[in-house]
Length: 479
Image (cartoon, rainbow, N blue to C red; front, side, top):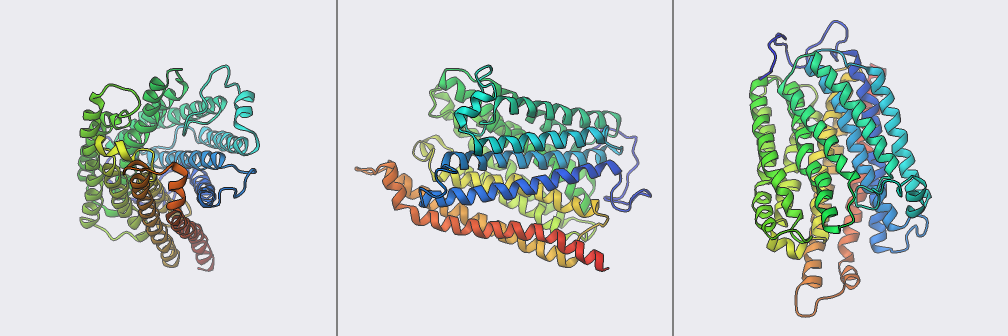
C-alpha cells in the first residue's frame, strides 16, 4: 500500500492536461539515459563477439586489442549501460510515483553528461593505454583500487562514479521526500542507495588476498544478488501496474514478499563465494543452504509477472512491453535461479568454479534479470516520451522479433557454454589423467564456435530492436 493517503487513486497510465502520455515534463530526462544505455549495450556485445573469436583464433586483433583488454571493456560496458538504464528508470519512475516534478531536471542532465564522458574516457583509456600506465597516470598509487575484476576502473573514475551517484540519489530522494511515497518508489530508492553504499567497498583494497576477495564480493555479489534485485523488482512492479491495471495493493504485496526473500537469501548467500578463498569452513554450509534458496525470489517474480498479466483489467496497446515483462520473469528465474543453483552447492562448486559453467550462468543471469528489465522499462516508457501510448503495430512486431532473436540466442549461448563447461570439468578436473587447461580448451573449441554463432544472432536481434524505434517514427510521420 501507499504510505501516504494524500493522493487520490487514478487510472494506471492516465493522461494529464499538460501531456497526453507522460504526467510530468521532467520525466523526459530519462530519454538520453536510455539512448546511452542501448548504445553502450551495442558496444558491449561487439566486444563480446571479439572475445568469442579470440577464444578460437588466439591472435585475432592482437596486439591492438588483447584478450584481457577486450574482456575488461566487455564487462565494464555491461556495468555502465545497466547503470544508465537504472538511472533512466529512476528519473522516469520516481516523479510518476511521487506525483510531482523531478527535484532538479538540470542536475539530472548535468549528471548524464558527466557520467557519459567519464565512462567514455575510461573505455578509451583501456583501449589506448597499457593498464599499468593507466594506473600510474590516474593516481592509483595514491589510493590503490585498480586491478580487480569488474572494478578495473581508475581510482579517479571511481570517485567520479560516487559523485554521480550522490547527485542522482540527492535528486531522487528530494523528489520522494516532497511527494507521495509508495512501496514501489521506496523499494527502488532502497535498491539505489544500496547500490551506491556497497560500491564504496571498491575503495577498500587490503594487501591480504583473502580479505580482499572477502570484501570484493560485498560489491559484486551484493549488487547483482542483492540490491539490484530490489531495483529489478520495483521496475517490474511499476510496469505491471501500468500495463495491467491490477490494483496497486496486490502488486505491492507481491513486491514486499519478493524483496524479503531476496534480502534473506542474497545477503547470507554471499557465502557461496567464500568456499575456496581461505575463509572458515562454516561458509560452505551457510553458503550452500542459502544459495539453494536464492532461486525462490526469482521463481516468485515469474509467478508475479504471469499472475498480474492474467488478472489484468485492461488490454494495454503496448504488447511489446508486456512481452518483455513476462520474459524478464522467466529468463531471470532460469539464468539467475536455475543455472545459479546448478553449481553453487559447495561439493559441486569444488569442481565447477572458474569454468565455463560459471560463464553460462553469468550470461543468462545478467541478460534475464537486468538487461531484460531495463529493456522492459525502455519499451514501456520510450513511446510515452515520444508522444504516444505505444509504438505502431509494425514497430511492435519488429521489436517482438528482436525480443525472440535475442532471447533464443541467449538460451543457446548458455547451453553451448554449459556443454563446454561440463566437458571442461570432466577433462581438466576429473579422471585419472586430467588434461591441462590449454589442451582442454582445444578439445572444446567446437562449443566456442557455436557460442560465437549464437552471439551473432543475438547482435542481429539487438540491431533489430534499435530499428524498431525508427519504424515507429516513420509510420508516425506518415500518419
